[in-house]
Image (cartoon, rainbow, N blue to C red; front, side):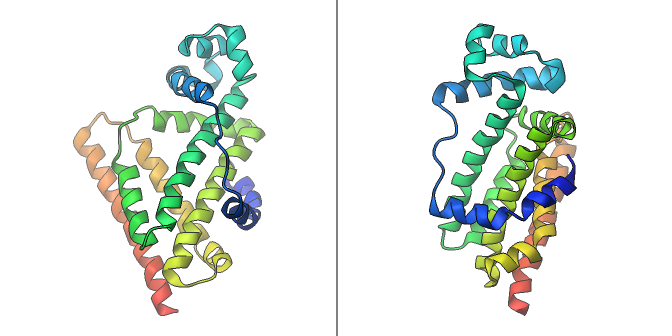
Length: 224
């Protein structure tokens, strides 16, 4: 994924965040569509974004190709909905974080859960496929970058609450730290669980690094 294209979208993050606060998003996918998306994950992971045909994806969902096309006209549309579905989950998590008595403490707990949770072994390989596809497909790159910038915007809200800085200043001042935290969380998801001890130790190191970054942000507020 071209990080410079993400920076172009980053300029829209503040307006986007305000829109989200004023107008909470509706459900991003109908129950049937969400069910299909969960079913096709394995096909993407097994054969890759380019290797998995629409026939493969329809088969994974237990549907005829014609019926499958009624829900998703292309693989790009599938990935866009996968990102939207993940974004809805992330927004719900951050709503809980931001409404808590201590947003930074709740964020730490959320990140620890994300880093240590290996309940879906397909998640990391799937996002690796999406990242690779984004290098070749501008529409997918735009969706992935928009998601990253939205997460950065939510992180900035937590950092603003913790430091007392205005949201715009927190977004600008901690942009690199936010990108680094997102990168580390994605890296944790992509760790292969072949060596359980090594994987566990890597997760510990990743979480320790993220906590250190959060501590530095919190102390920046104390210094004024």
